[in-house]
Length: 496
Image 1 (tube, one colour):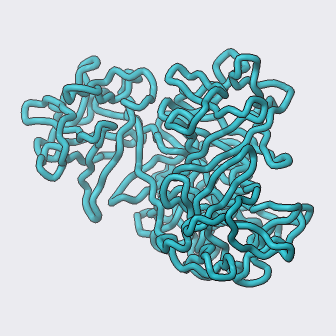
Image 2: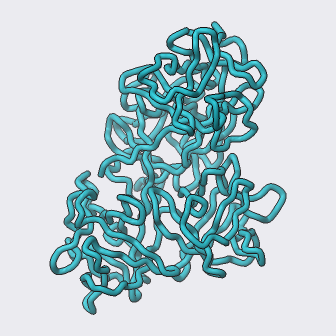
């Protein structure tokens, strides 16, 4: 599987609590943002084996500073202007100082105006707090070991995050980067506990769960409060702070966590217990195992390759559903093969799967798959998002302050609990309140649980349809979060 590495997106907050902001026109940039919105999100670009960093605005232009200290955001091609290069100098408190490579001066502020004329970092306005703007639920791969981190329970019943998985499979392979304030982050495992420097898991965040993010050569490094770096124990493979110094064992890559789930039809789940033949054999009241779990790997809008899990988990060689004369087998070698690419369509809570030739995947009486002209109603039961964080261009989804409503323009995220129920899902906040639609179709929180359906359309994005009125949840810049969308668009797609 080619890695789906995440772009490092973040906001930079100055000493006055204002965000570095790129205006839409004129290449203007300032420190006027009160919250982290689209114009305050920057993408970090770095070259391999280089200390130089480039800050890319939502417009696609790069931050630059001239010899007079003037700051702009108008350069389209950073390779043609050396003034776009900055060195990130990590301060003792975890903040960044950004030194322009060409002129050896630091980026600072005079009120909302940006200047790049400071010769030292002693001016507080030359120090910036970093706030990640990526979706916080990720898969985390160690560069040296080429293994993924996941929650694991030892024979003694002790939980820890271990870096030993070749393929990130299951909910336990999803980790959450939680902002703890003052530029510090915690790494939350699937069970809701935080990774400590000693490798143990803590129920709540504390000084031993605080890490500063460092980006180097496109990799992520997490530094603890004692100046050591999170790494992989050579014996146990437990994620913990290592000895002083920095090696590839401390380098990580963040990747998107693809949707994984089970296909349900006629009271049974699709299974690979028969080898390469995909067939509906497992009854829905039996436990779902890796052989019944399939991963949707994005190809293009509404088209996915359906990956299967190697039961032994000892090979990186991906296998996918593939159309053959007799139907479907799990022996495709690449998501780029046309005969491994399936289109998905939706009808309420049902998913229709269309094969490359235009026919639909169906099920014979013996449970085996074949192709026919008319669609068959499947249910795709999402398995690796029992805890859900939602993000859109306006911000994160969370409880509206002071009201029992859900809003979509929050700077910080809320974590929701997702429960599968008869083809749909209920969604619950941390206080135990459920999502439902009120008379105006707004999503509100209360004791009564509404039912919702997930429709996968883009890379790590789905639409959410309310059962009560059949409409898609739509977000607005004002934060309105309402089930009144009639079509799939950027306003009805949610990054999960």
